[in-house]
Image (cartoon, rainbow, N blue to C red):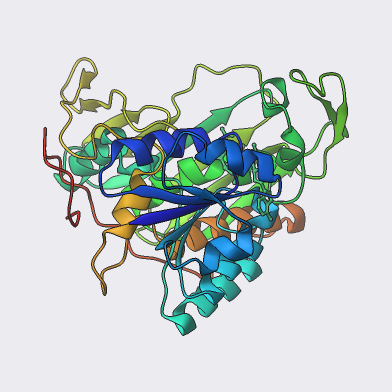
Amino acid sequence: MNVGLVGCGTIAGQYLRTIDRLPELTLAAAADLDPARAGETVRSRPGARALSVDDLVTDPGVDVVLNLTVPAAHAEVAHKAVDAGKDVYCEKPLTATTAEARELLAAADAAGVRVGCAPDTVLGTATQTARKALDDGLIGRPVAATATMVTPGHERWHHHPDFYYAPGGGPLMDMGPYYLTSLVTLLGPVATVVGAASRPRAERTIGTGPRRGETVPVDVDTHVTGVLVHRSGALSTLVTTFEGVATTSPHLELHGDEGSLVLPDPNHFAGDVRLQRLDDEDWRTLPVSAGYEPAGRGDGLADFALTPPGVEPRASGRLAYHVLDVMESLLASAHSGQAVSLDSTCDRPRPVTFVPGADRTGPRG
Ligand SMILES: NC(=O)c1ccc[n+]([C@@H]2O[C@H](COP(=O)([O-])OP(=O)(O)OC[C@H]3O[C@@H](n4cnc5c(N)ncnc54)[C@H](O)[C@@H]3O)[C@@H](O)[C@H]2O)c1
């Protein structure tokens, strides 16, 4: 698959490492609002060209458009790809709003092209080993989960953190997709949410880079909590915040009537998954039993690109739309004080079987 990358910023480097690692993906072209960034991206890649966005999406040498622009630009760039008849895979969140996402998915269906979306961390060994444990009945009937994301804010390390504090940003829209995509992968889609949120500071000060000391306005809630009622009846309790220094709470815990699971940071692909069953005296680490390994950002793109026609890709636009709906509904609930029932739903994505040392070219099962 020949990849046309749009948005050559901070996260692009991680994708390029994966594209370089996987024989099934080749960088064909790159584009950015800043042409110098596109030029730099293709500099050491013979055959890859720096193009304008419009030229990239219509280029016959591009099979799939990889949209790594900022969230506010996701819809515009994705529509250009769809209008040009190209599959498109976006960074998260899929778009800034569910209204934009609905339009995009409808346009893609009408054009007969597919939309995929990050995060693909859930395809790694951590979430997939937990998924297998769950599906194998190791915790019995799943009843509840807790998900906790605490950070003081990305302006401490990101040179241009403005988008994290603009609509489409905030701790929920930025980090929520990792936690919520894991929760949907594990416990299935969500029916109803109840949210609460706060916005204690009006501005943030950039802590690093050329704009260090500059302030950015805060136009989003920076502490967002809520409860998700899954269609299965399981309840997930979520905390996402840019207002905490650190936490000792696990990133993700799952509880069933026969056992509990602790998962590592869902922003990463791998890590220990621990289980304690009713009669166990302590936690034990589960052997890796499912998921892509090694894996990095972009494995979801490979999975998407190589999913046969008629089969829903694992990192699908429909899953991302449902996750976006959960997030938007949590914020709506926080502001209205009412529970919100979701219109969207999705299937639990297909699990990833573990094939140690497998030849990973060709369609992925
Ligand atoms: N930075 C991270 O650690 C990280 C991690 C995971 C996911 N993401 C996601 O990746 C995406 C990009 O984040 P980033 O940190 O790389 O941002 P960034 O600001 O560093 O880079 C974005 C790039 O997109 C370009 N761009 C913006 N609008 C464009 C448009 N309309 N057409 C062409 N180019 C455009 C910008 O010029 C910039 O080079 C976001 O959706 C973010 O949520 C970021």
